[in-house]
Length: 76
Image (tube, rainbow, N blue to C red; front, side, top):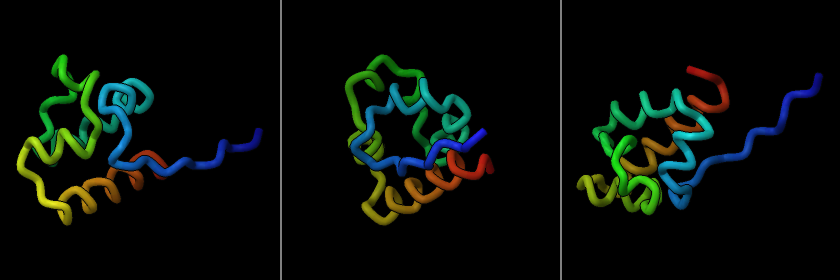
């Protein structure tokens, strides 16, 4: 069985959609202080907007995005 190609997650992804598709990624988001994964607003916000609203800098968001993609691609 062929593995599906990995599609890189961007900061423009809807937060609720991301957690719905990859529930375990919530662990990474919580590590970065994004406790909004279970908030009603997550259905309206993108990952980037949610991070900005929590005071994250662009470099912190980039670091988090790298970790999110690594987690999804490799499961670690």
